[in-house]
Amino acid sequence: MSNSSSIRQFLLLAFADRRELQLLHFWLFLGIYLAALLGNGLIITTIACDHHLHTPMYFFLLNLSLLDLGSISTTLPKAMANSLGDNTDISYKACAAQLFFFFVFITAEYCLLTIMSYDRSVAICKPLHYGTLLGSRACVHTAAAAWGTGFLTALLHTANTFSLPLCQGNALDQFFCEIPQILKLSCSHSYLREIWVVVIGCCFGFGCFVFIVVSYVWIFRAVLRIPSEQGRHKAFSTCLPHLAVVSLFISTAIFAYLKPPSISSPSLDLAMAVLYLVVPPAVNPLIYSMRNQELKGAVKKLTTGIFLK
Image (cartoon, rainbow, N blue to C red):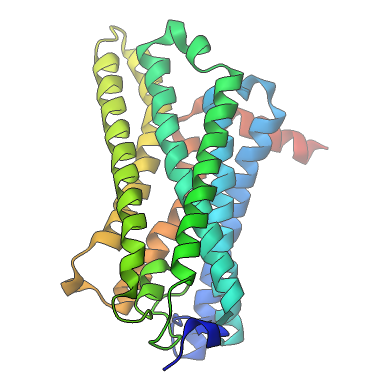
């Protein structure tokens, strides 16, 4: 039996026991990580360099790419290093830092996706008021609010989680430091201190979810009233990628955290964590570039210019 003051490191869940599979996981995640870096980095560079993309929608997309890079960089490099080095250790301070930054990026991304749904609803439902409701100052303030909410939420959860006495060893059934796994190590009933924080977080998350749903109800009602097929196609091309990203983010996270305990297992938890942590940052750039002709043209123009130099 040990308490949190005597714990110097945690043991993370290994992806596999066989050395060949560990190396396979390393190369697989390295490819995914490089794809996420390339895709999100290309979107950030394109939006920053092309003044035609200096609009609220692309400003929020730039912030989303930054958050995707941050979230995948918080967890995946350590997991790759552990697979390559056949190691599962993570220090107590590194675990706290990983948990903190993970919550910063994930919470801020969820808030930003909510803001982006409002941006699309205003652009489609109230186009004449778009410049007034979402001017440059409003965009900066809302993006800062998303980042600030992520920071405060992460600070609250990290402080509460790591102030709990840990009496159940130091082995985590996950490849990164996750609150539910750390709470399993806490002393009997001490985890109840975290419940009020979780309740507040759930209420806030549900409120954002309802706001996103209502925004898209408004959007689809407005789009269906557009008389021309070309106008409907243009409206859908700007909002469907965002809807796909929101659906991927929310569905994987909900299943990972709210699945019935009867079907829970370390291997399933590991797979779900990979699905909602690793996959979205890698595929989000692809989703946004598939239907957005303006962004595709800007990316093509940027890459062509780079290769011709």
